[in-house]
Structure formats: structure tokens, C-alpha cells
Image 1 (cartoon, rainbow, N blue to C red):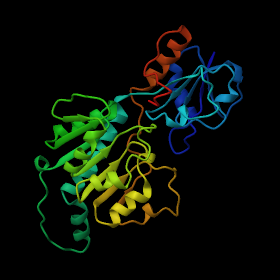
Image 2: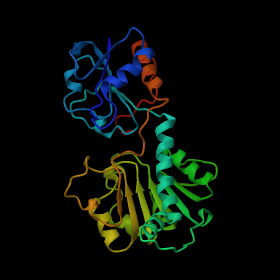
Image 3: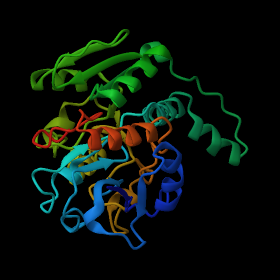
Image 4: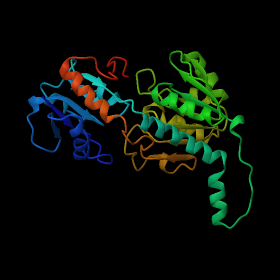
Length: 311
């Protein structure tokens, strides 16, 4: 049986690069890339960043789709994915650390007035402005799984007040954890910054609508590193235009690349990055190789996804 690599992510790593990294981890295993000739009937495992339409249906003996990352919504919603095909994701430390660093970077830039100082320097203006103290700033982290938990702990370690929220009860040292729908508005009302690290599921899609934005602390900043469909775009723009929110930092979007005509590009209080908050798979490639071995041996998989739940 064979492993097929079809990342379907031209701005990320090439299939051939990944094949070279997997080769020493899976000696003797046939590893194919999407652009080469191979026998579809031999493919038991497909490794993807994004599942291309029709790809799974073209592999008659496919048993596992391995996501090279965390979010699996585009896989579990694929209408061509046979019911018997299993799905697994990755939980490496590297992208979790990078996403936490991304959130911290934008909060610290605001706390330390870095953009103001850069602008003043270009104008040769000497104007000291006091930074804000972390101990007096409350960070909300929505989603306390592998990545969200790392993000919450990182902020807490820097001396920020941290409120964590999740669907089910969690416990993280140094973080006040709350859970359940009834607790969410109260968390939002108390936070100066809200980092969204939630997956895309039936319960989270369009979560941030006008009502939820209205529940946020006036002037707060939202940072979305989860999934683009957590936010109703027009509701966010309305909240920014009304002054309810102080800003938005967005790394994920409903449609990627973000369409040229989208108003996020030109809004003065929106910061856009092209889905780069988590990048490297250091520590995750070994799990992909291990899942291939476990699949062939009929053993339990690492980080298998509940397809019905979506994560």
C-alpha cells in the first residue's frame, strides 16, 4: 500500500519537499506526490493541507485522510469522502507555539504603542507615551484545546490576566477557565483582547454575529486565528464602524485568498495576514509516519477525528 501527498496548498510546502522528509521515517513505503503517475488503487493514506474536490473519491482503497495541520472542516464536509474513510489531524508543538506567539505579538505591539512610535519616528516627532501594563489587561482565549491552551498559558506566563472559555470544562494553571454558552457573553464583556482559537463546527460557524460583538467590551480587539467562518464579516465591520470594537487582527477568512474587493482590505482598523500564524510541522511529521504504520497494522490512530463532531 502507498501514501499519497497532495497538500493542495501552493503557498506552503511542496509535495516533493514533504516526500523527502517522510522517506526516512517510512523506509520501504511507496510515497507518491499528486503530480506524478501512480496507481490509485494502491493508496491507503492521503496526506493533505486542503482536500481537493474529488480526490478522495478517485482513490478506491483509501482508508485514512491525514490533515497536515489542525483544522479538518474542509475534509469532514467533503461530500465525496466515503463514510468508512477515517480522518486524523496533527497536534505538533511548533504551530501551537507559533500561533501563541502571533497573538502575543499583536497584543504587545498595541500595549507598547509600537505603531504610534514608528509613525512618529517617520515624522521626527519625539513624544513619549506610556505603555499599558499586562497585569491590568485581560486577555480572553476562546477554545482551550491543544493550541488555545498553549496560547492561554503563554499570555498568563507574561503576566496578563487571562480568561479562557471552552464548550466543556477545562483547567489550566494561571488561567480562569469558564465554559458553556451562558458564560461566553460575560467573558467577552471583561476582555480587552479576545483571541479566537476555535475550530469550525456546526456550533461555532457564525458564532460572532451582531449580538455577540455587542457583548464585547467597548474598544476591545478581536484576534482570529481559528477559522474564518467563526465571524460574520458584515457584523464585524458594523461593530468596527460603530466604535464598539477597537480593532480586528485576522489571519483566517471565509474565502482564501481574501477577495480583492473585500472591505477588510481597506478598513483602517483591520489588520490582515495571509493565514500564516502557524506554519511549521516540526514534531508532526513523525506522527504522520506513525499513523501510516498504525493504519497498516490495524491499530488505534493518533489524533483521530470524530467526523460527526468535526474535530
